[in-house]
Length: 97
Image (cartoon, rainbow, N blue to C red):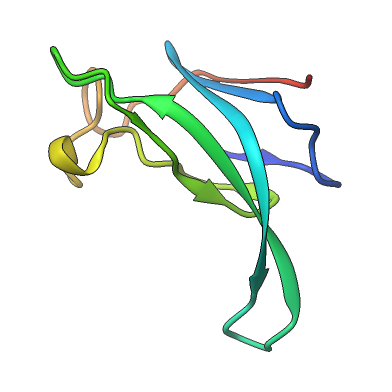
């Protein structure tokens, strides 16, 4: 999965990974560890798709979004995809606010 933003997207922008919706709710300052330069992190909000959970959690990314957590901390399973077989293509859609 990959979404690349040339500039900071407006709050309310949504990324859809299959049926899971991530909404941009905040942008926070960040200092890069590699060179100490100031940067910004995009803060997304989504709900855990684990059966019966639905807990809201907030993964973060840079302007180049290569991955986002799909489950909350309680249901995180690093090597297991949310649906289907490992290695399948995830449908990605970006909706700007």
